[in-house]
Image (cartoon, rainbow, N blue to C red; front, side, top):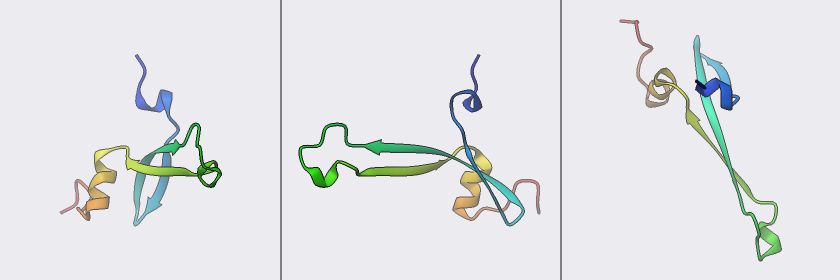
Length: 65
């Protein structure tokens, strides 16, 4: 069985002693009719685990008082 790490390469960052893990999605315009959007891409990052989601909400790390 495949797990998340088998199909994606996560972005891992250290911040305040915590490891934050993100998945990235890139959206592009496949066949634009206007040349101004031919190279446009939008990259979004989403938390890959509950600890990263908590950090983004400003919640303390799990296991700390």
